Image (cartoon, rainbow, N blue to C red):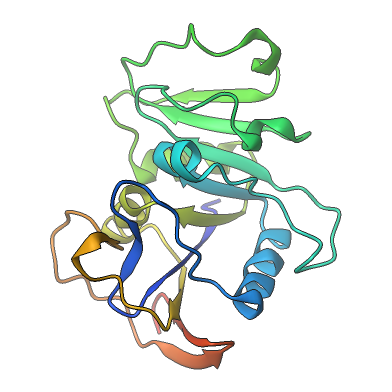
Amino acid sequence: MKPYVKINFACSLDGRIASRGGKAFKFSDDDDLARVHRMRSESDIILVGRNTINLDDPKLVVNEKYHKSEYIPDAAIMDSNLTVNYKARVFTYPRKVVIFCGSGAKDEKIPGNLRSKIVLRRSETPRPDSGFVLRELGKMGYSKIMIEGGKSVITSFISEGNWDEISIFYSPVMMGEEGIPMFGVAEYPIELGTPEVSKLGKGFLVRIKKGL
């Protein structure tokens, strides 16, 4: 069965998700973080791209400061060439980490102590696409997927129609040309559906459900 996909990210009012050069910027306030960590607690697995791991080093767990839960969701990384930082914090928790790589990726650099934790899924193409990722996760029994970035991963899933819900928190800040836009190269425009807009903390939340 096809997994249910929730895409979630935060950005500036002008649609930027980070500073250029990879410098992290905290867009979410405590109210939004409570929502995000609740979503994590309801997900089977959290998916991000290699750049998100290498630049931001997220834990991809539920922080009890924002949501009380001892649950640790599995993690997934889209990494065409297997150049992720294996010392990243995502690998330090007792869970599976599924890595989706391309056909030519070399796995010799995967540390021996992580080989029992990492589940490698190799695409027949140089770059794994969103359809391949969903098929493989479905085969593995995952039914609720949360996607948190970065730009290439979000663009891939949305442009290829492999999503069910999109949640975007807009922070009251402008990044201008120094910021990285939330979406990458795709065939635009992309029709998404009717958004629900609500005030949340110091910003506002836009939610779109596919087909509505």
